[in-house]
Image 1 (tube, rainbow, N blue to C red):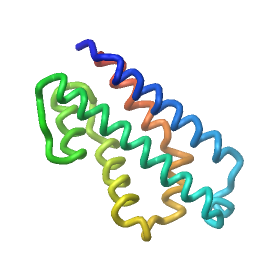
Image 2: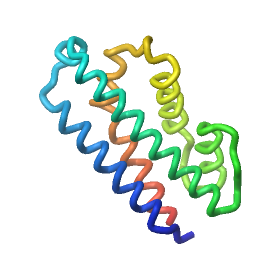
Image 3: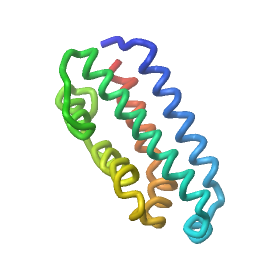
Length: 136
């Protein structure tokens, strides 16, 4: 299916968000990160925005395919898998759950987990982009 330019714009924004986050944490140690309120806050927000972009894209594809609506963002990822847009709903369902943690249980964010996600799992966002590009 050929999607409109909105999805491509959101994918470009996702790339920019992930690139900026990765660049901002280059050379930062886990201890330095854990001690820096600014770096932790910036990382939480950057990851939240990146996941929101993924959710927006998923919901847009579902709407364009006439396959929705869905009740939750996790259900959107599950539906994209059933539609063949994504090979697997994972790690995207986990991303949505992490976003929910940031938004609703923000006082409990483990800095070690946050650092790991931001330094070792940014490729999951690129994987999402690639899967959407391949489906188009």
